[in-house]
Length: 59
Image (cartoon, rainbow, N blue to C red):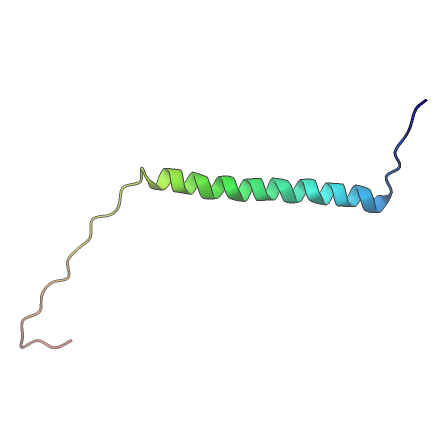
């Protein structure tokens, strides 16, 4: 005996939406973790110190 499942248009649409949403979620998570991983190896630019002003100078 063979049972065939019926999928109407709404069910198919729901499955496609779930697959696309899951793929988008995985892509965003991968991007965040990739930035966190590569951020550890990235060089930070050297900070420049602001020139000191003498007491008589104004901004």
